[in-house]
Image (tube, rainbow, N blue to C red):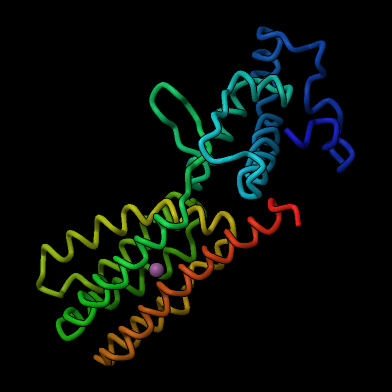
Length: 255
Ligand code: NI
């Protein structure tokens, strides 16, 4: 762990927040957490921020197991804030909970992501083009409502769901149930990349302008423009993920 509780104290937090090493007994920590519920939240944020940084920079490599007991010891905290921090990281697709292994750093493969982007680009543009002529005013207003919901949503786990809902609403009138089923599967597997991406780059990278432009073009029944925006939407996301990996490689390459 590159950052320890002592390092954090210099950033303005008070020393009592993290129990000192000589106090690391299970019974005492349990009672501390029970007594200090409000502090546990701050501790959670600290653990979350520290691990997030480690995962996004690659300091904590993909596939690495994050054992709760070990983390609790390293952070000098009880397991409760550790567990909660791990849950937050899972929502951001930064870790996965695997059977028998517990929490491990997510294996986000760029190749895998680019594969999904290529499939999405082919299938979604086809469905969108077929759907546009059949979209009714209430489909379009549902899409607009979903854009507003995305703007208002704070939970990263819900953002993936809302993005999927938005896209599926626009394709729903394609009259090709098997095509739509394939798209839904791809969007579901894209979910974790989206959450990872937003976690790495910030949620303003949701590309809501493109979402709005897609609805506008669909409302105008302008198939060529709508499809072009969707292609750009997917290509931009793929490019951003490529750049993220290139930047990370440049750092860890130690040039
Ligand atoms: Ni989208």
